[in-house]
Length: 278
Image 1 (tube, rainbow, N blue to C red):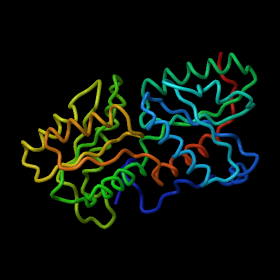
Image 2 (image 1 turned 60 degrees about the horizontal axis):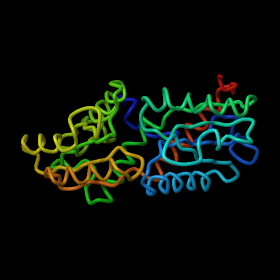
Image 3 (image 1 turned 90 degrees about the vertical axis):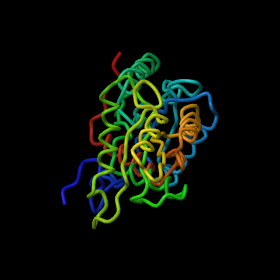
Image 4 (image 1 turned 135 degrees about the vertical axis):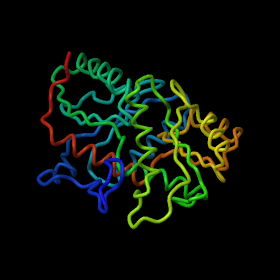
């Protein structure tokens, strides 16, 4: 069976490191600075810190620092202060405005403080094959059997003004709904549709209502969100009011996300460090 880039192959190398780089993951490894969007809601930062603590536990001796683009310290420049070299990893689920504009601007600020700083820049966490199993983990915890044929899913992202980022979510929903998603065939969801909490349509409530109108026996909502906060609360409130049966939890510090962070980190180590552009 051929696999979409969004569908896990029979075995995955997530969390492994390329030959010759293993030593760099212990003591003396290039520090990891993970950058999240940030939120006024303290639950969001607590979730990010819980995820990074699990990364530290998975790779003892690796220095892991957090930074936030907005709504609170430390800033990226503050997190990088005192380092001569680092891997900067966006804790973002899609490649969009924050990774293309906000992060380069934050790196420019860091350059002003530390002109000799060298950075390896990692890619965003998503899309990645392990994120769908992470979503199914959260659905299972909410009482939804993975691939239940009587259940339609609404895959909800924060949404973006960048159409490319929204297209990634639509592709992810299509991959999840594909008959060959699970090895050996078996059950598949009644349907999987994308929705966006902001900047694009359909909204999560509209997607739930459309599935109900189409005759879906049961509707579950899977938030493609890293942490709790304004969007997660609004998605839960609006979709339940629109007729959703179940709303799963956000991805949070899931084991799959820990693996993705480490894979993005080791991937960045393959590239030569560069000086932060002015």
